Amino acid sequence: MDKIRVLIADDHAIVRQGIRSMLDSADEIEVVGEAEDSPSVLRLVRRLSPDVLLLDVRMPGSSGIQIAKLLRETAPKLNILMLSTYESDDYVVGAIEAGARGYLLKDITRDELLTAIRQAYEGHHLLGQAQLDKVLNHFQAQVHSQKKLSSSISDEEVQILKLMAEGCSNKQISERQFWSEITVKRKIQQIFKKLDVTDRAQAVAEAFRRGLI
Image (cartoon, rainbow, N blue to C red; front, side):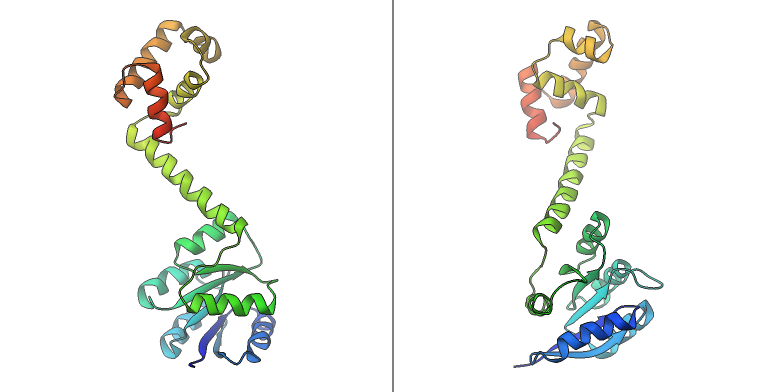
């Protein structure tokens, strides 16, 4: 069985040494090199053709996420596992958008790291539940925003739709929004036109269908 060729990329030598010590005793894994900054990552990936890259999210020069984006174009068969001390939404989502197979925290155990490398090598994605929630919430927010944009519904009109969904009358909406009832009626008619509906029930139903409320 061919060994899984791993490149370790981290700007701290002690971190690289710690990871190497965890991997050296694994029969099916071969650490082929270590990189300390973004130029050396790109150079060693090109020269060594590793199967899996363990990439620190915060590298000198270009960030790990920027490196991953570049490698997605220049080394599409490379499996990248992002390493980090931080579990921020921006890092997790950015890593997955950049093409990383997974996002691992540096307090990971040896067994967890070995499993992650094997699964990445086999083409699987690895995210814990909390990380998966971050990614899903991000893309759901994007879809929600895109749907709002595509229907030309403003934030103000979304608020009116929410009040309509609560069963508020024109008078109640006018009191909450500090508008005249005539203004409310005009705005609701504009919403009907944008959603291509003819009454309040249809408007609310269509708003739900499009993910507007």
